Amino acid sequence: MAFKREIQGVVLQIAGDKTATILVERRVMHPRYRKFVKRFKKYLIHDENNTVKVGDTVSAVECRPLSARKSFRLKAVLKTGVE
Image (cartoon, rainbow, N blue to C red; front, top):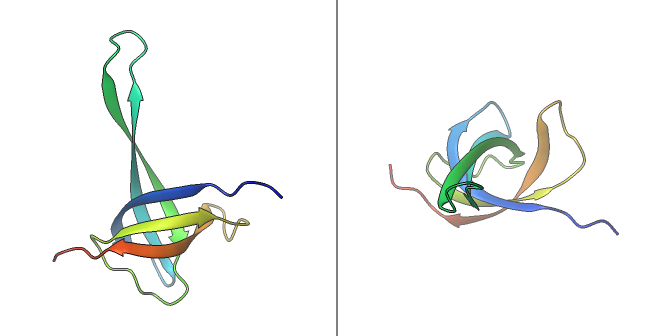
């Protein structure tokens, strides 16, 4: 069985029905300056029940491609955002 990637990020926007955009931050060491820098990437996740709100911290797990850009589904809402 293949290992499923798991990502964690903050919901930026609700991008249509059953879809949310999350921003994932990772810290990598700069090759020359040997300093940790932040790298960001946006992912579309599938939210079957439309439960997430903007600002929530969520966990998502990799799945089969659901659309051209959507290959992750919501696993859990870790922290609710403040609006």
